[in-house]
Image (tube, rainbow, N blue to C red):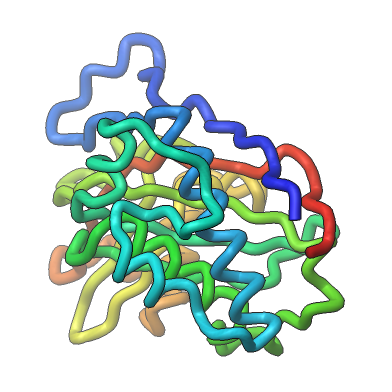
Amino acid sequence: MSIPDAHVDDVTAEPPLDRSPGLPEPVTLDPEVAGELLRIARDAVTAAATRRGVRAAAVGASLPGASTAGPQLSPAASAALAQPGAAFVTLTEHGSLRGCIGSLVANEPLGRAVASAGASAAVRDPRFMPVTERELPSIHIDVSVLGPAGPLRDPMVFRLGIDGIIVVRDGRRALFLPEVATDQGWGAEEMLDAVCEKAGLNRHAWHDPRTQLFAFRTVRVSETEAPAAR
């Protein structure tokens, strides 16, 4: 399989005159690491869909990140993949969501987190049937690497399309990545309403001071061409 080119979304630039205190800082990602994360995710999705075993175990055994078939990485990229990281892998097919799973907490190496998320997005997202081998050529992969989340004390300073959102209350939790708002055409209040509904709460629960809101930033890595079938 040819390795698709990587495109890193420029989400590091701050909006003009944005001086809101307490909001999360931008997340950056080296292009070499970005390309390797996409390769890891593609390998994991393929392995899961073809039932050849999830590549996460191989990644974990040979960190930093690359399988034996992968390119030789620089020491800096290898070190970055071995650092704890949190990431989501999003699969789309012909523009429609096909799976999205990931981790909120950086409790394992970034390379392993992406491998696990890719395999899970392919075959363990409860909203969808597992991805099949036949679908692989039409599956498009995005990897979102998450920065640390911080309390969003004033929902009115939430930055649409820049901040991701987490809602927590009464043992319920839900998350939306920053791009969900723009993909759905939502405004800020619609995004907050929707994440509350996703958590099983009243859609206006974010107005209640008992509801905890957290904001985070991501850097998203996208395949820019469809990969050839293996």
